[in-house]
Structure formats: C-alpha cells, structure tokens
Image 1 (cartoon, rainbow, N blue to C red):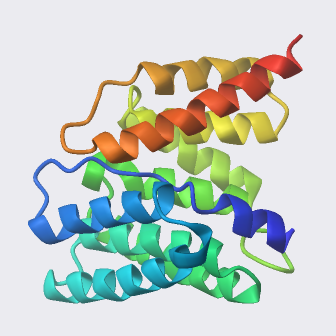
Image 2 (image 1 turned 90 degrees about the vertical axis):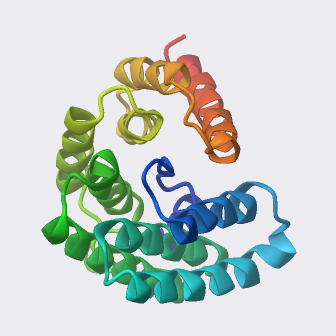
Length: 210
C-alpha cells in the first residue's frame, strides 16, 4: 500500500496562474518541470529544493491560502519521489497545510484546496497506516467540482477516483471533461502533462467497459 501511494501521489492538482505572485508562478513552473521533464535520478533532489523554496514563499506571503496550497502540492510530489514511510509524513504535512488554507480562503484557486485534499485522501493508505479515507475523498472531490465544474484538475481527479472504485462509466465522462477543459494561460507545461495522464486514464477506463 505504501509503495502504491508513493507511485501515485505525484499527480496532484496543478493550479492556474492568474492573479498569483511571480514567486508562486515560479513554483508552478518548477513543479511542472520536476514532475514531467526531470529524470528519475534527479527528481527527488529537485523537489526537495523546491519544497524548501515553497516554504520560504509561504512565510514571505504571510501564509496566504495560495502559497499554502502550492507548498502542499510540492510536498506531496516530493513524497512520491522520496518513497517509504517518509512519504507518509510529508503527506501529513501537506494535509495540514491544506486544512490551514481552507480556514483562510476555501475558494482560493477555484476551490483547489478540495481537489488536493480529495486526491490525498484517496491515494494515502487508510488507518492504521495513514489518514486515507474514501468517503472523505469523494466529499472533497465533489465539492471541488461544484466550485470548478469545467476545470481540468477537478474532473481528472474525480475520474481517477471513480476508476479506482470501479465506476468506469462515470470515470470516462469525467476524463473526457478533463480533456475538453479550456487551456490555462501560462500553464501550458502543466496542462500538457495532465492531459497525457487523462488520456491514459481514459484508455484504461474505456477498456474496462468493453
């Protein structure tokens, strides 16, 4: 279960860049490069450095909701690269940052707090190993869809969750919505990586319906 979690957690939500500081935009591009363009040999060190920078940005921006969300996303990706029990500790840190962000501004980044919390809760192992909880995951992901019904990330992660639960027909619908989502200005690198993941998920879910 730990290995499966470590292999899946890196694909966490990638948020749009509108109305964000240059520091957070730089974190976004750094994340996309580390996640989709770096080699396996360099990814962990790159993400560790990026996580340290993200923490600095969070402190500089008085722990704004947007900076907390991005620090959480980067920590989650670092967890995947690191692997082992250390990954669970990093995931817990990410969850706590997201809960803090929710208290500050639940609508930040079009409700991305809930997309990210939802994905964490269905990828992390459940009790007694971790805090994973499928019911909470579904509730968070459905809330994120209510806030951003046409977004690439809410639809991708809800589809991924549904496929993991065996609801392939509905998963196919949301994978298709993710692929049809509008391009995000300045987020071409992240969108390309997410669409590749959505295409792969769609192919697998569709094959289960044959």
